[in-house]
Image (tube, rainbow, N blue to C red; front, side, top):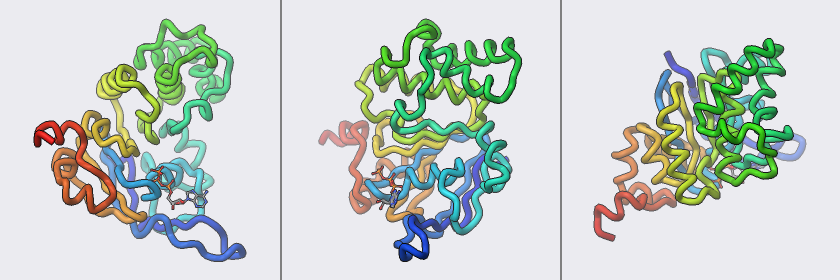
Length: 250
Ligand SMILES: Nc1ncnc2c1ncn2[C@@H]1O[C@H](COP(=O)(O)OP(=O)(O)OP(=O)(O)O)[C@@H](O)[C@H]1O
């Protein structure tokens, strides 16, 4: 079953009264199957963040078909979609707002009216999956960037998200935290869509990759094949990931 279906997606910012702006997504189509881990790569302004925001209903008014977890992305379906699809912001500070890690991770299940026993079970489960159980009583302001990222991921896992949508998850992480995040993501069950221009991170966490340029899907295929294609990457404002540069001896 497909967790995401995007068919002929077109989107432009702005409204008619402010004048029509150019489309930032142009007839984009691809699907993501249950259990797949897919990367979205593209230069600055390619439309990666816009695409993720459309999937969680933050940007209505798109053209074409967009379905998440079997539901059309419409106002009526948003609360059901957000129970199944967890959006991890690029900036973890925009996502964490409670006092402690535990409170933040417990927020969504509590908000959905689950019993305190279930809230605790889900919260501890999510903290375990992200390897931050020992930080549960830590104040959010006392977390490092890497710990905040893990807390933000735990806060969407606790509501039972089947689909993780992540915007630049490795941004601002040092090598140790980045490696830890790769290790944790690769052990998580479920489906993932990760937007990033950290191509090494995509190589380490996604089997399939979609290349976007100016809002259009240029390539959709095996990560290894796309990330090895230097000519393709350079033509679209990217460069070979380090892993392949070393192999070439560059
Ligand atoms: N709120 C907005 N209003 C108007 N235009 C916007 C808005 N947000 C983004 N854009 C424009 O939409 C296009 C796509 O932006 P988007 O942030 O989706 O790209 P991106 O691939 O995520 O880029 P980056 O890698 O720099 O984060 C860009 O031209 C950008 O300037």
